[in-house]
Length: 367
Image (cartoon, rainbow, N blue to C red; front, side, top):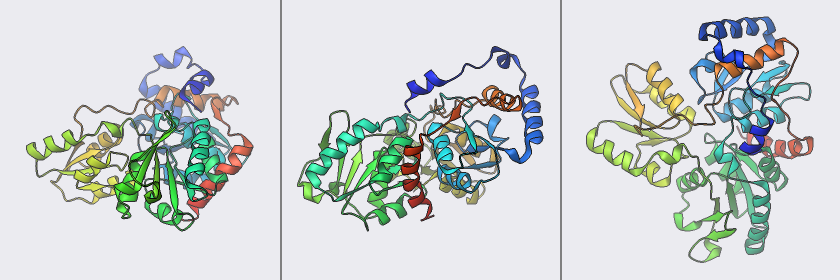
């Protein structure tokens, strides 16, 4: 679902929620949580605001939240503090009797929107003409249910930044080539770590509907969809070089959604969970520049005051769409449930859901 579709479906936050004090809202949220008990489950992604994360029953990255959604058989309502594709995944993995709610339907992902299903089907048809039946598709979990369904139908799987290496290794046991979408940077960085050279990777441009590559097509092992995370694209080689000059003792750790050039210059690169654990285990007094979403960086700064933790990009802002879930929308969703009204429910078409579940299950089976 595109951001435009989400905006059109989004109900408008009632005005009175904008006048409530933070303390009153937090008191109400806690009261409803206690009242609803096990009927309510609140997963929260690491990139969410502190004001909602403090009420999460489970926090984690995309893989962790997919796993807990699949394992949850008790909650009647799942109020997801994340973005649209995450709530879709939860709806796919939970039972028909469970309702998944996204407090603000504008909470989307520009990266997920870079792989449109119609573009994907046209691109796949062209790739089949060029390479025949030698390609298996993999999609980053940051993608729409429709893309996951496409991948599931074609024998592929979803991946996260935590398990991308393992899933690429599996995919190469299935077919000679991989189509990786929608994030070219995660695909490129992961493939490179597996020993695949940049000369063996090509980029598919969905807008121009053409393959960007110079050389013999037979040498291509990975086809990268031309998409990117708008947040991680803001970490640059210049950021790294300036920090090396001004603070050479600082360790640089980045997410693999950053460009290959930035990852190559960093000291460490890995998933959100990897970043959290690395800083947690680091020696007191060390300095860390982190290349990932700002809400998480700020949280790490507060949690690890024995270390100096800051953003690799000094001008970084939180992700616009990931940052949509705030305390007023969160309380509105909960108070609506208390009144017996379900707002902003995420419903994935059953046929799409069945095919998407194939892709998700192939990932979850491999941990």
